[in-house]
Amino acid sequence: MEQKVQFPENFWWGAATSGPQTEGWFEKRHENVMDYWYRTRRNDFFNGVGPDVASDFYHKYKEDFAMMKQIGMNSFRTSIQWSRLIKDLETGEPDEDAVAFYKDVIAEAKKNGIILVMNLHHFDLPIELFKKYGGWESKHVVDLFAKFARTAFECFGKDVPYWTTFNEPMVIPEAGYLFGFHYPKYIGKGKEAVQVIFNLNLASAKAVEIYHSMDLGGEIGIIMNLTPAYPRSDSKEDREAAAFADAFFNYSFVDPAVNGTFPALLTDILKKDHVLWDADEKELETIRNNTVDFIGVNYYQPKRVKAPEGKQEGEWMPTWYYDEYDMPGKRMNPYRGWEIYPKAIYDIAKNIQNNYHNVKWFISENGMGVEGEEKYRDENGNIQDDYRIDFYKEHLAWLNKAIQEGSNCFGYHAWTAFDCWSWNNAYKNRYGFIAVDLNDQKRTIKKSGHWLKQVTEDHGFLYDTDQLK
Figure 1 (cartoon, rainbow, N blue to C red):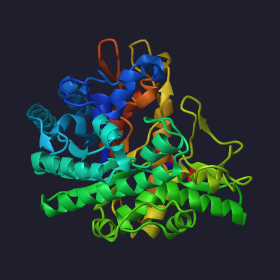
Figure 2 (figure 1 turned 30 degrees about the vertical axis):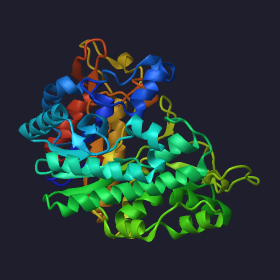
Figure 3 (figure 1 turned 90 degrees about the vertical axis):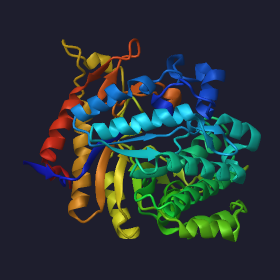
Figure 4 (figure 1 turned 180 degrees about the vertical axis):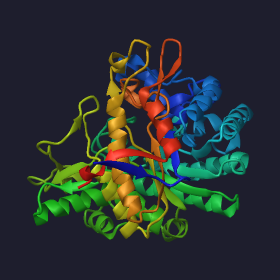
């Protein structure tokens, strides 16, 4: 039986994107790692499409904010590009044109009644810092990030009430150092990945410390992609595999951000295997003393794991301690190759509530990417994306159940507001409430955008809650 799934009146309804995925290269002083990867290896990207124009948010942000308001959004997360804002990467000196651009963006969001959440790093390290110092393996790059953060806070801190340090920091070591699907496309560099994990946590804590010291009256957090690890069986071996996968891929960032410490399960294993990161007591103290005000959770899919089979050889890898397995009968998004498991959003919420002193948090990304969405256009040219509406309803219903049980969740941001460029997938899968035609950059609201408007007006929707069992 359908009943109202009711959310609080002050709940955040919005979406997320990023500077490198929307702005385009216009007037940028530096290339980031993704820009460089595209410029030098264009064939790595779907249909050869890169971030050079993207969704042209650089010129169309006024139209985009107006459309976001039109579909009922009251909040929006994007990012400031390090490679755009900073003129001199060593000193942190800002570029005047970039400051003017971001100030205009901030003003336009305010004009449309949209709360802006500004993120500092979305996989977009300036390429010079990778080539010169080795990127996030370097403590010097950590210090340069802190200078960038301070500049951003000085320029915009009084006008932006909510900040986040990193988006999905685990993706940097996972995709860049372990499994080779993001630049620099290393495979099997486990020890280096472990150091990157520590350095990213240290960089985040330093930015939090700077922000809090400036007394700007807002809040600062971090955005993490959580992929809860579910064991194949209740056997001791499978449960241990899931515990390690959670400790490495999830809690290596949640624990330092919220509690100021790293999971003992993880550090004990890294010590035993002689791959623990290089850190001194002052750095550990910085992490310990500079925890976040809130966290954002990007949830797309779970991780299904089992005990590893056979002895691992070669350089250290986290896969020494788990294997992924293909669970029979799971629901899939066939376009993205990801499992659809809405209940995990409830499990994440309860974990935060029970094990992280119910810290304030929000869903900072959740979405369904579909290839070839043009086949769902109706006679008026509007995309009838009922599949996306159903996806959101299921996840929101499970989230609401957790909120009713006391989870301190204050918002839900979809990925994404308008179709945007997505790394080497480019525009293969579309996610937006608003469609973007790459031929002329025309925006068109999808059926899901009109649905969102109704949800925000009603503070909820009808749903058969008997399914939440």
